[in-house]
Image (cartoon, rainbow, N blue to C red):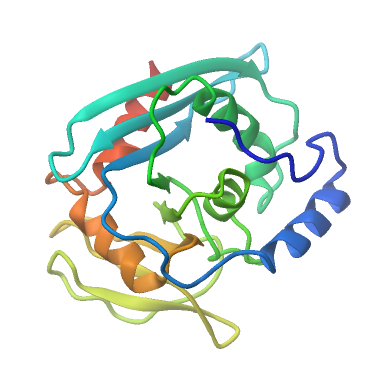
Amino acid sequence: MIGRNLHSWQVSVAEAKEIQRVLAAQVLRKNELGTPHLIAGVDISREDSDGKARGAVVVIDFPGLVLVEQNVVTLEINFPYVPGLLSFREVPLILAACEGLTVTPDLFIADAQGIAHPRRLGLASHLGLILGTPSIGCAKSILCGQHGDLGEEPGDYTQLLDKGEVIGAALRTKRGVKPVYVSIGHRVDLKASIQWVMACLRGYRLPQPTRLAHLAAAG
């Protein structure tokens, strides 16, 4: 699976932010996703002492949530850690992992932000645009925005707001644990994003695709 070459990855911090602003206008926030048969999760490991990290893509079937394929690559990280520019560090590794897939996912879920991002282009949206595939951000923490009180039952959610705009939702996936933060990546709406995160749970806080991708990347 090979993505489109939308821009260079060898850019400055200022150039990266401008790329995000331009690409954010291309994100489709309406739902174009039917029932996905193959759902991919992506994640990368921590950078090691040699400046390398492992990028992983895991593909499961739906509704069985059974592993179909996974691929892991180890590459050097070529962009500094800058809050809000995570995709410039991680997407090249994820794309390299995706190139080794023999199947084509219908949906990607990333342990990252979608449009719940200061410039409305987090990793999930960036990846979705490059691959041209529906994508969802399902992050463990907030990058920007605020939300009100949240119910305790699985499936309870409340809107995540930034400057008066709905940018995502705080979603309770399991009773007694912290919520996850779901946002549109590309070619889905927020309702569908919440629906598919909930549909991919296997009794854990995180949906099965990203949970397995995290384990694969960690080695």
